Amino acid sequence: MFNIKQQLFNKDNLKKGLLVLVAFAVVFTIFQDFLHSNFNKYNFHFSESLLFKSFWLLFLPILLLQFKFLAIYLHQLQKRKAVVIFLAVALPTLLHIILFPIIVWGLSGLFFDHSYRIQDTLGYTLAEDLYKYVFVYGLAALVFIYRQSQHQTTTLPTVFLQKIVINTGRNYVTVPVAAILFIDTSAPYIAIHTLQKTYLHTETLKSISEKLDPQQFIRVHKSTLVNISEVLSYKSRLNGDYDLTLSNEEMVRLSRNYAPAFKKLIHLTQ
Image (tube, rainbow, N blue to C red; front, side):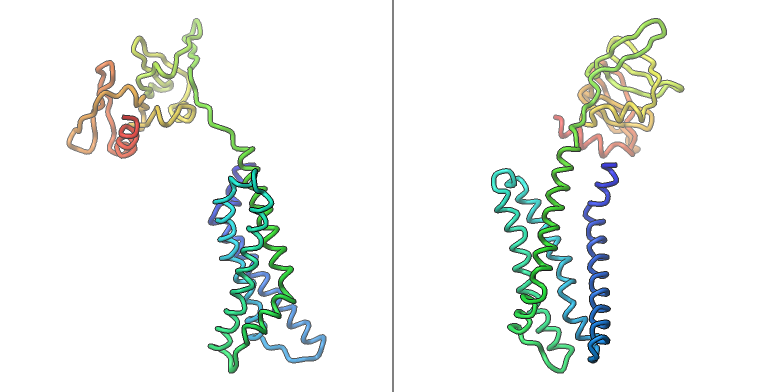
């Protein structure tokens, strides 16, 4: 359930959702103007209605700026929650109030036979739209903060395996993960190699790899995982592949497909 919610609130989906809502608001409010003109018996001018409904279009970029502001100052919420929320609502509202008259003045000057004065449009938007700005930016701030708090409480730290319990047929053996040199497939099992012994374990390589720390165990071949701390050196085969020398002097092949990730990790751990 959390993964689904996280996908809904990721950056790309958020932009698409805002774009759809803004487009719907523009179309709906223009239709309202049309109905209002018919009911009150005056001429409906689509271009003029569209011009003054352009304030909805400003919500998309300003909301994204608001979310960036909240993301930057989210750590201040515990100490200065009221101040951060006030600024997160007041600043976008003020920016919207300033930009809308300028946009109307500029567009009307370009596409109309007259231009609407900035001071007139400013008075109009304060009288007609101010509550919309406060409501939208206030609601957006609260939703953003709520989503972040849900993310922090739902996301638990990943706990990786520290030991593997292996059924040897007669008894169970506990193998510390730190003692593993490498793991490879030995169908229908996987073979867990330690300095003392190799154990067969009834699990897939993919399954065991998801339980191990990716900063410690890395895939070096489609059928092999290696403990990065047990790698002494690696040498090119001159065909894109490499030979890894482990701490027990055993050689393991590094496939060219996995070489970039391996090199990046081994340089980070040195």
